[in-house]
Image 1 (spheres, rainbow, N blue to C red):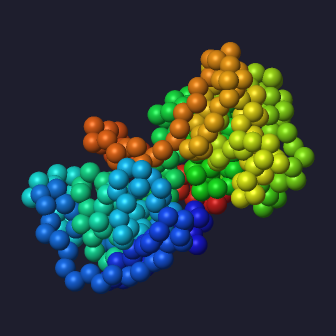
Image 2 (tube, rainbow, N blue to C red; image 1 turned 135 degrees about the vertical axis):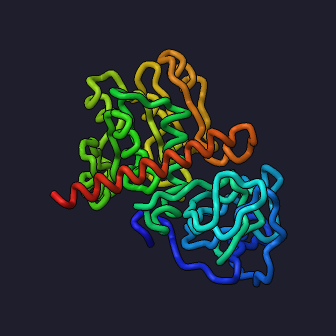
Image 3 (tube, rainbow, N blue to C red; image 1 turned 90 degrees about the horizontal axis):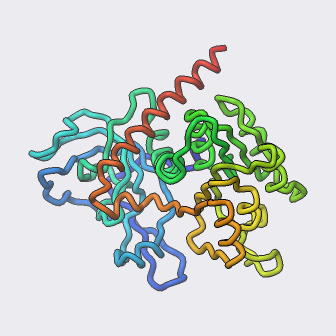
Length: 336
């Protein structure tokens, strides 16, 4: 495991795929022999993979957008070295170090020694960032930048609540929000998480420990903001029902949707990862009175619309730049 929460390992000549025979059945993983790569197209880049991060395979989303297959490629976040480029490739040349995310409809598995990738899914890897860190952070960097820049439009002086800040996504979101000059509040699910967040650089995020269930997040946030409420909330999932009605699998450390609506300030923006969020009429009325909005964070949306490709590449490039800057701050902090 890397410090960013992704499994990163060296790839082989075989490619890894997931197989799900029936709905609800656990996915099994199989290695398929790779003899020859398919013929490269004009905009393809041949990449020797140096590291690949494993994220969850969203079979439900693949089914909903009619991309369900018998064998699903595993490992989409990759970093590596360019071996060859197609005749119309303009962004890269051999020996360039790159990082990127394979598209949802890709037939390529990142867990393979050499793969073909369209140039529009790659950006240059910063020199100061190692292979594992590049592959392990690109997905959460994309999600955090999408949430804060495009959905929430964070700006200096705004207050941002990042729930479960010690998660890989939460950690990057905190650092990105601080980089933009925002005042950050975060929740920690354990004492270890709290200590980890307090050691982050740059320091300054207010950490609320909710591990014992005795802290009211809404009350704490209102107190922290002088009863004005929080401008931006990034959740890590929410509880939709009362404790007795909530499924046992739902983490009770998550805040209730009413808590989030309560702590939102006037004109606040709630960015949610809860794809099945249900808002009752009283919830909608409360949001209406505050002029607040709810946005859904789906980082795959950039790859589902070709007209967004330029913005998508810009996000990946900026994420790499911020990671490089953060590496510099960490190094400076250690030298002192």
